[in-house]
Each structure stands twice: as structure tokens, then as C-alpha cells.
Length: 476
Image (tube, rainbow, N blue to C red; front, side, top):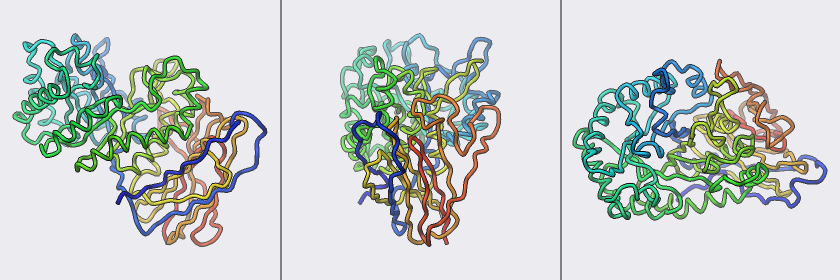
């Protein structure tokens, strides 16, 4: 039976944006330490990029290379351990060059320098003209990658969002799922002939036509080829036309947790029942580049942290947040000098990296005031990590005085706080983790602070409005 982790559903309060500040609300968390749920993979936290990002820039330099020290530092500081390359530009427009051996070498040199564990590498599926011979080209590239970078390869993938008509209409031979899976199996076979041990992720479908993902899992469950069934999920749909306030309000709404549950029920549970792993190779708050003034704010950090923990608790293999260079919904962006840096969203990934290793623990809550707050627990060896996310925001938002109870745990407890100036969900700068910024020019030096124990097996911590905290508790 699936152990439901630390999801805590709480009720939005009417008038959240108005009214005077109130005292901290009492919340009790009780963590079960005798049983455990899902084990969180070491490469759970990832980023996704379009294949075009592998191509050389003017002057011949590469974005992904061992010389891009700013990007390497950010990957290490945030804790990004997985990378998916593919997206629309893996095959569209058809004039987009296919990355060659030099581009691949630069990518994996970066991967090793940044300590990324695994890469999903996408190859072309659409073939508007059979004379293009993409199956043969894919096989040659796959063999090169396998021969040189096998230890860093998660698996291969073919195409991108084939369930969308605007995508498969580019290929006269693909008209529905049946013709798609025929093409997919043909191209996968060509790669397998060159690399007999090759594994694949698919179908990289959008969440608009979930039956493609379910049908793919059913068609390939006994093939022995599948590393993971993968899906794309932009929770809020299109961001175009939404105001910053609307973007922030929706990201922090409990309705988005309901959206997670809907995708889980319709897709993930079915995939898992077929004995196949499930991963998001593209996830974000909104597509069409996101919501300016919403996606690129502190609200994005709190949402991303919640999203990661929710899906880790529901047996996902991992999440790759998509980065369209340089859309506002990306975890990475450029500073005023054109150097790569992070949006606040990346802080959510960094917090998960602190408290998201090990096995999910069951958690229950008493929340009499209905604060908009979620909490999750993960045990890693002798340590218990409790992540608390207070999404109450605006002038009437409330802090929480949280009491944590965990039988069998009586060691030292420390906390790491994620904060924005004044608890402002719309903050874009001066976000802090452990009192320090995450930068691209040196190690992050955030500090843990001591949490006093009220009594054996019980700790109390204050969580301010619009903030998050990870509490690390040692065993006996």
C-alpha cells in the first residue's frame, strides 16, 4: 500500500490579502518513524533544456561546457543532479542543426564538472522526409554517447510532445497514437541494434492528452526498453495574459495540490501499476514562458519546493524543471551583465536538496487556524528532515508556531530558513537560504541554527509568513 507522505492540505482563508497581521498560529506535526514510504532517488532534482542549448554560440563557445564556471557553480550550489536535453528544438524547426560529437563532448564535460549524476539525451523522431534517415543518424549518435559517456547517461528519448497535433502534423506518417508508436519502435530498434543495452524514456507527452502516456506505458511495459515513462506538466497552463498577482495567487493556492492529485490519479498511478517508473521531464508553473512578476518571484520558490516534495512522496522518479532560455519561469536567468544566475525558483530546489534525501515518512497535522501550510518528512539514515512551507501571503498572512513530535528521535535539532524580505511573495531579489545568497561565483555558505527541544522527542520552531524551513533532527 502506498504511504501517503507529508502532504498537508489546508484551507485558503478569505481575505488573505487584507486585514491586520495576527499572532502565530499553533500547528502540531506528528511524524511516524517506524515505517517509511518511497525512497527518493539521488538524481531526483533536475533541469530540462531545449536541444538548441547544446549548439555553439557565436564565437564557437558552448553554454554547456567545462569552462562555464558560473553555470557549474550554480548547479553545485543548488544541488541539481539530473539533466534532460530535448524539448521542441530536438526536431523543430527541421532546419535546427543536430548536435554533433563536439557539442556532445562539451555537454558531458560540463555534466562531470558540475557533478550531475545522469542525463536523458533526446534524439529526433519526426521525419518530414524519409530521405533524412534520422533513424540511422540517431543510432550513430547514440553509439557515440554510449561509448564515451555511459556512466553519465540515464537513457535516451525520442521526440517531444508527440501527442500535440501541431507537432505530429509536421510528419506525414504520424497521424495518431498507433502510427506514433510504430515510428517510435522503429527508431528505438535502430538505436538498440547499435547499442543493445540502450534504455529509453517516453513519450514526453503534454498533460493535455494523458491517454498517450497511458497507452505508451501499456504498449512498452513488457519491452524491457523503458527506463521511465515521462510526462510534461505545467500546472497553471498558459501564463500569457495573467497578471503578476494572479500568477502568485495561483502558485500558492491549495488548488495546485489538487491538480497534482488529478495527474497522479489519471496518469502516474496507472504507470506505476504497470511496474514502470514515472518522471516529469518538463515541469513548471506555467507555459508560454510563465508569468512575468509571478513565475520569477519568491512564490515560485515556495511552489517548486512543495511540488518536489509532493511528487517525491507519490513515488515519482524525479522532476526536471524546464528552462526556455531566458523565459521568466526558468530556474536560471541572466543578470544585468549577461552572466547566468538564478531566479528565486531555484531556491526551492536548493531547499529540497537539503531535506529531500532518504525515505519519505508519514506525517499528520493539527492545524486549527487553517494556515495555508504544507509539511513533509524524510529520513536519511539516523537523521530526520522535516520541511515546512508556509504559503500564507499578503497583509493578512500568519506565521506559525510549529511543534514537531517524532518518537525515537532525541538528538540535536537544527533549522535552515528560506526567506524573502518582509515575507514578500513577489520578491525577486535578496532571497536568502540560511541567511545567505546563492551566487554564481563561490560556494553557498548558509547556516543551520539550533532548535531547542521542548522535551524528549518534541521540538518547536517558528515559521514566518511566506517562508519555509528545513528542520534536521538527529537520532538518539
